[in-house]
Length: 95
Image (cartoon, rainbow, N blue to C red; front, side, top):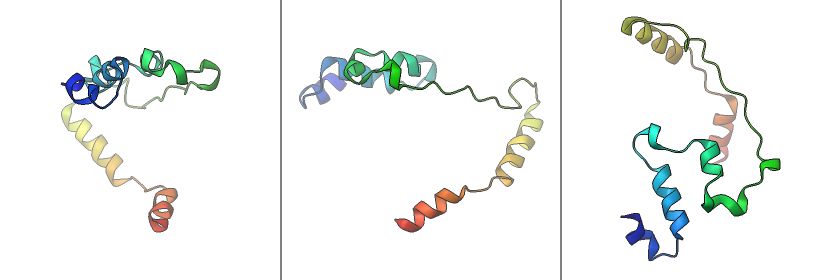
């Protein structure tokens, strides 16, 4: 019970409701980014003029119908062909 746990630690009712909405197991029950930004809990930080909207990503496979075997092959090839970005190793060396 988030109210019982966080209510005693000073988190507002709006904060508890917001946290509960973000931690839904089923992603269909979670708020979209726009819904989350319009949450009463984030009102004091919400500034539409300073919140850029990202362009949607397009996966070349999203419009195709593939069999399970084809999906396994696609995923395997993506994993095998993955290259770790250079910034990852730089930040790891600095830590």
